[in-house]
Length: 220
Ligand SMILES: Cc1cc2nc3c(=O)[nH]c(=O)nc-3n(C[C@H](O)[C@H](O)[C@H](O)COP(=O)(O)OP(=O)(O)OC[C@H]3O[C@@H](n4cnc5c(N)ncnc54)[C@H](O)[C@@H]3O)c2cc1C
Image 1 (cartoon, rainbow, N blue to C red):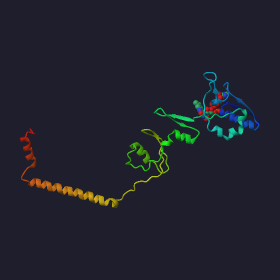
Image 2: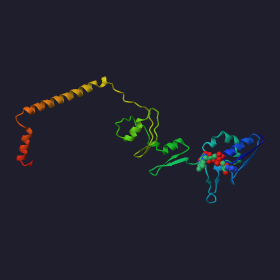
Image 3: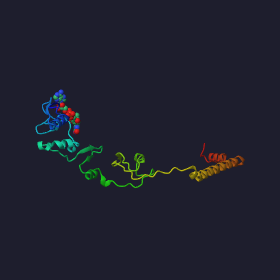
Image 4: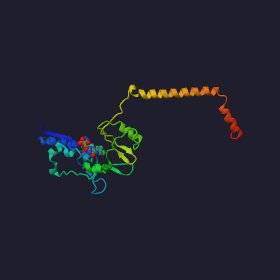
């Protein structure tokens, strides 16, 4: 092949054209718009001097692309712009989580100073809401939880270790079951004994108090 026509001058069309040209093919690129670039165009859409990305604006993979490096586009004026803040996510309380190029600075901004080990958390821990305890309960050793909303912001939990309560067998709890059964039996025997005593009693205790209350005017 000595001649090729590429339709469209977006990043893919231009990459294709450049690859063919480096192989010695005579390439013609056809573009319907007045300027080249497709989705990567940057234009003065509003006022002079203010540049707008018409479509794509962030190209994190491009700076590391072996293909881009091989083209040596810096010779033609390519410069990568590195934003101060790569990404920001507004939060309900008016603050924002921001992602910086430094992992340490990003962690600091996300409140790493306030982070730390919670020590052992159990289902009885009172410092956590039921929702957070449920979330923690789903984690296994080494798991990182998704961000969870807490009273003073968002929390991410790393499960360093997990100790599940061992299942107890019937033999383990036999003494407690026996003690509870004996206690129930004792209470039933006492109630039966009391019933018998009341049936045989000469004095009706309830009637006595009813009469006494009526006499002192407490009951009509
Ligand atoms: C809103 C938006 C935001 C985006 N943001 C990002 C981002 O931040 N980062 C990122 O990596 N990607 C982003 N993308 C994706 C990126 O823009 C596309 O993946 C990329 O532009 C695709 O390149 P392409 O060459 O295949 O097509 P295009 O870029 O669409 O280029 C096609 C070109 O072909 C021309 N053309 C079409 N038909 C003809 C014809 N018949 N004759 C002549 N010319 C023709 C068009 O005019 C155009 O110039 C975004 C896309 C959109 C829509």
